[in-house]
Every structure is written in structure tokens, then in C-alpha cells.
Image (cartoon, rainbow, N blue to C red; front, side, top):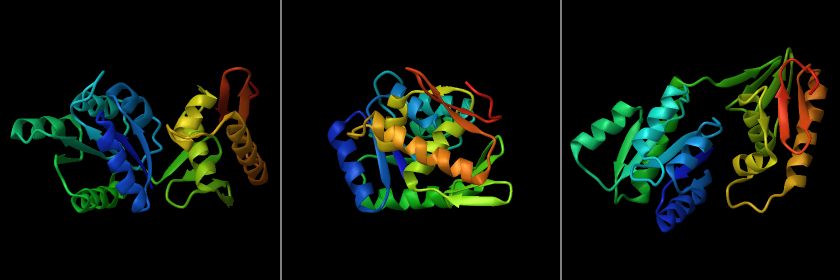
Length: 227
């Protein structure tokens, strides 16, 4: 399960990531609202933990923009404020839950469990693009009657590319979304996993393809049309 943490307090963000990773969650961390919005729009996260007071774009605006763009990922707002009007503003903006700082690790984990239980009721369990269907729970990629299981990184790569079908996605962005913001992954890691994913698509007999766009990145062509 992958969690996006959007928190400008670097020490708190690291502490949150440590707590979550110790409990089996994967995490990405960004420190301003604009980056938080860009990352959350990818659709690869199961939950977004979002501070309210952020540089560049506040948390209320971030969640409102996500909902305006039909991104249904559950959002847990964090704030040092405890005024009722702020809670109402957050929930009216489209947030799913609200926590006031400070909080205990046990409280945070309980809120996340509640959100992920709720998530299956409000979002689709699969992502379709062309003749391919990606199961967001089992990590299976299906074409017609054939299916193949993807590794977590293959799944994350497929999810980003299929979510942005027809659009060019840079290697830099894929590294950030699939390996994480602070990852040491390089271009050759992306190239290797794109190759793995292409082989599995060929095994399935899919007409879709992943085009290499020179000096730009990759594009998922749902109809199999060449770049």
C-alpha cells in the first residue's frame, strides 16, 4: 500500500514516513502543496496525508483541486488548528478525514486503516486502458482471458502510464512516482522495468504499446498506434 505524505515540516514528514514504513506501508514525501497536487494526480496512492498549512498551495486548495479533477484517493488532513470551522472547511473541500496535531502513531494508523477500508467502496478496483485492465488490488494485468501478475514496481509503472494514456511521461517523473522522491534510481532502472512490462504485455497479446519518445520519456498508446 502506497501513501503520499505532503508536509512542510521536514522532521515531522520523516517521522511519519518512518512510522508508516515500519508498519508495512510504502511512502513518498513532498514538502509543498503544488508538488503534493502533482503527485496525488497520478492516482498511484492509496491515501494522501496532507498538511493544511503548506507553502505554494494550502491543503484545502489541494484537496479541492483533486476532487475537481475527479481524483478520488482518500485524503487525511493534518493541522495544528483545532477550530471547528477549519474542520468543516477541510471536509467540505473533499477531505475524507481530519486529524489535529499532535497525535500518536496508534491514532494515525487507526485513521489510515479506516480510510483504506472505506476506499474500496468509493473507488474503482481496476484501471482500464485500451485492451488492458490493471487490477489495483491483486496487481494482475489482464487482456481478454489472459492475466499475468506484476511486481510492485511493474504495477506502479503500469498504473502511472495507463493513467496517463496518450500523454508523454518523463523518466524523471516515473522515478519519482515509482521509486520515490529520495530514491537513487536512474534512467536504466526505468528502462529495465519498461522492458519487463513490455514483455508481459506481449505475453498477454495486447495491442497496446509503450512508445519511447526520444529525449522526452514514454507514452502508453492504448490503441497500439506507433509514436
